[in-house]
Length: 309
Image 1 (cartoon, one colour):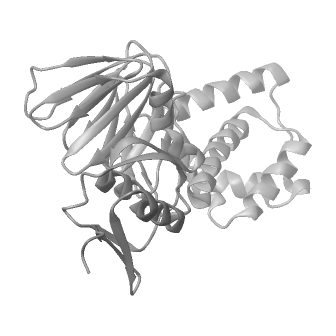
Image 2 (cartoon, helix red, strand yellow):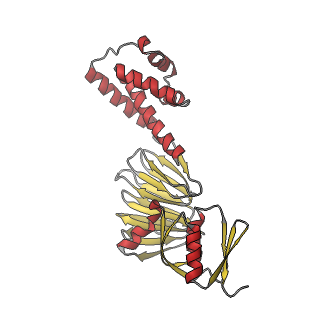
Image 3 (cartoon, one colour):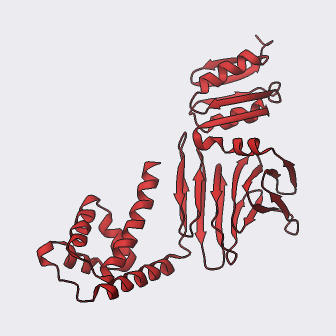
């Protein structure tokens, strides 16, 4: 997760320095830029890529005494810096960004349009921000989207089971076993099955849809339950009359152990709030309150009916 955050920060800093280079800098700026370039082996390359300024970087930053003084008035310099930043934004509109999280890893990414995406463990998605649309391809996993309002550019999340389209809202999307679970926390979204292009279903705040390639089913949720869906952001899982197999699947993304649930126990129901880091605590609870036996064998976990020997 730290690596993703560092990459986002470096990209933003490079865009800032590229604009400042074109707009003019004072002595403090030049010293700060020199320190930034020395701080990471890839900083110089990223900055050069933004404005193709590799030659100018050497001129400005090899030594403070070798740097020319900016010749533009201060106000003009700031206007130029702002214009350069705008050019940078235009140049990189449409550049795809990919995000991937590993076991037990969560990541938050700030997008260039002001939106934010929070990725749960073992999630993979790609983001394309274009002039007419904002598009996310969620290959697998779970993410919560806080979408900045932009009526001119719909925000579309594409999944294997279908698409979710909004203008600006907060919603959670989770892929699982051929279906997609969409929960709206704020605003309204529209969901569309992959194989029924003409069928679009509106989904209001406090509602949840199970989206499959051929159909959509919607159920209302209480405000508390809707918020509990996104409890993974705090490292928790909240279950309310949840199938045991589905509950175990939530935990599997946070642990390297292989967990299998016998078909005879898969539909048993579980409730409670649990720490996603504490798999053993969940397993002990399950064995205590449900008619199951939990077996731990060579790094694998098997949940079977308690009557089996």
